[in-house]
Image 1 (cartoon, rainbow, N blue to C red):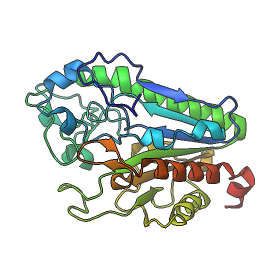
Image 2 (image 1 turned 180 degrees about the vertical axis):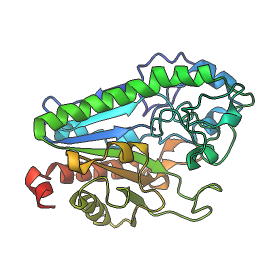
Image 3 (image 1 turned 135 degrees about the vertical axis):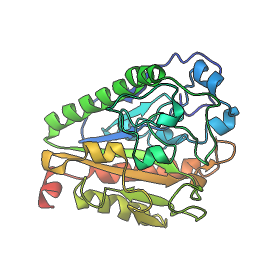
Amino acid sequence: MSGEKPNLTALASMPPYYIDQPTLQTTPLIFASPHSGCDYPPDFVAKSQLDPVSLRRSEDAFVDNLFAAAPSKGASLIRATFPRAFIDANREPFELDQNMFSDRLPDYVNIKSGRVAAGLGTIPRIVSGGQEIYSEKLTFSEAAARIEAYYKPYHTALTQLIDNVRKQFDYCVLVDCHSMPSIGSQLAPDAGHGRADFVIGDCFGTTCAPYISDAIENTIAGFGYIVARNKPFAGGFTTRSYGRPQDGIHAVQIEINRALYMDERQIEKSTGFNHVAGQMTDVISTLTDLTTQDLAAE
């Protein structure tokens, strides 16, 4: 389970994702945690030049635990088990850095995105903070194998969840759950600056009804937190690609400042964890109160 300390040398025996479902889905809500996985394949650990704690810098550690109450509220929670440093499910399927590979990448690979340039493609070059993961180049076949075994099953499952919920309720609300370092890294647009407590991303109002983003922001602000909208994070691949309000699929991203609930250096839960988890349960409850009529009114 991603709430526990990972064994970085153990066999990666978990499936690529888990879906925690309620006994009965009573709300059109799906919560997703694509970056909280900590099941580290041994071959990947062997190829990395980083120590175990540094390798975990990119994890949205324990975020799935913060939203663990979703099934008790009638919503589903899907969580990746694989770590973001190994493969990032919140990217295009083939968003890769040619400089990381010993062979030429196929023409269909996106090698020019800003995320690739920053070292944070589908197969990341660096962890959060800018440390290089690998000492040697990879082959494209290695990347393709990871995408087939981990990335695609996760997104296939997420797509099926969305389809099922939309069939039941006529619409779906996908909440993509993340955490962020408390200070912008040297490669981030806000390098060196302290961040808000929460950032709500809806791609500047294009991926979900304003009512949803407003409800989340107002609830969190009501706890006394500083909440930003779309800066520095407007929403990643998941929010952009799944969020189609015109088709009844609303997607919004929540970024939580890690300093609120964890020790960022040691990757451990802090004394604030239970408090934030309780507040995220309140956010889930707020969203379960949304109705089709509410959304239609928007």
